[in-house]
Amino acid sequence: MSVLFRHLPSMDRLLRHLEADPGLAAAPRALLRDLADAFLDLLREEIRAGAVADAGDLAPERLLPRLTAFVRVKARPHFRRVLNATGVVIHTNLGRSNLAEAAAVAVADAARNYSNLEFDLATGRRGSRYSHVERILCRITGAEAALVVNNNAAAVLIVLDTLAKGREAVVSRGQLVEIGGSFRIPDVMRKSGATLVEVGATNRTHLRDYENALTENTGMLLKVHCSNFRCIGFTKEVPLEEMVALGRGRGIPVVEDLGSGNFLDFRALGLPLDEPTAQQAVAAGADVVTFSGDKVLGGPQAGIIVGRREWIEKIKRNPLNRALRIDKMTLAALEATCRLYLDMERARREIPTLRMITAEPAELKAKARSLAARLKKALGGRVTARTLPGSSRVGGGSFPEFDLPTTLVAVRPAAPVTIEALRAALLSTEPPLVGRVEEGELLLDPRTLRRDEFPLAVSALAQGLEAATPSER
Ligand SMILES: *Cc1c(COP(=O)(O)O)cnc(C)c1O
Image: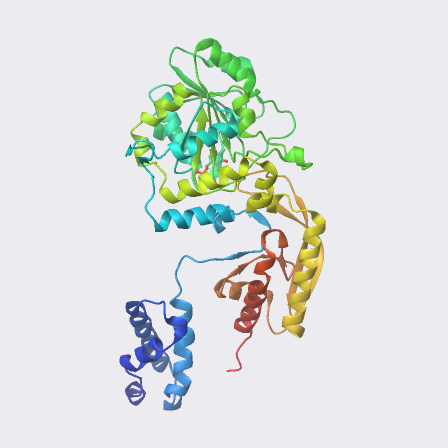
């Protein structure tokens, strides 16, 4: 055994091999050194365990290809592109919304160059970073003023902190929701220093419940979108208009957390997606409305706050605003996305999230057939691929109970590859491919895969099948 240790290649030999590999040209040298080290550790472990029993296993022609495969996988950046074949359009774990091309271009421009981020080109003096999106957000929503922070959780926090710190915020029991990722309305409220006053019952809240809860210490009436759950059956929520009428009479602001705000009225497109738009919330008289930038809106991660000037100005002056502010790339992406919304049809075509949600069943069926045909052609007898009707989800807590009809591609690996081995192997292909597994089949939903991604999906499956095939030894 100790003889074998002496046959281990030197670090220099390994590094020279790695540095000559064009596939690793972008990898930092320090990282290659760490990985070569890890590879040597692995070999020592194998010698000790008896897995490497003769010097031939350590010969360069056997070892170097193994080294290359080992390092190529591990030298990749940790944060990577993934193919989303789940059919969940706003998949929080996979990055929510893909930006429109115009927004991606604006981000790259803001990233590479100096800009007028906080510089007023009309006067040559200091400007406000919010000026770039405030007018367009008001133009779209009809609000008097607007502000953008890091995400909608931050938006809710700063609104509560500004309007209800040390005071009471009145919320319906049916709206004390947990969005996921530990965002719970009661917890955010505690953090802001507002006192939660719950009114109504879980399923039903009446206007008189709000009315009876009002005291001289009431800071706001808050309406929260239930997002990811539905209360059905014997239920009642108070319409925003009625809450506004009550608040106005007492000089108490009414705030609505829309969750996934949207600008596009899906019902007008014939889709039964019945959610209030930000415009409707503003028109109903809400004093402050908050929503996410990267849910149905299809823009960058951001928390958008629109509403009446007197409240928005107060929120802007809150010191928390400095801690929650958005960066220049987010601003660039948000402005570019909002510009598309000035023409709703253009927004629907060019914003990927909207395009995926509103994709026609016939188009999805054609895409599924095309993908299945490519898979059959490229992977021959190693898989069977068929198409079948199925459903996709909007995701991101939007329209939770609503199935969007789609056509799926069902892939079944041929023996000896098992579906579980394939699913696992697809997590380390280049790029990884994430689908759903049901009853021994991998289901790929073309709603969330673009046609230009099909070659990548086919390649990922080829790589996955290769890696999931049990080795001879
Ligand atoms: C998603 C959501 C939030 C949190 O928004 P983020 O942008 O993810 O921070 C808050 N409230 C509601 C109702 C939501 O649906």
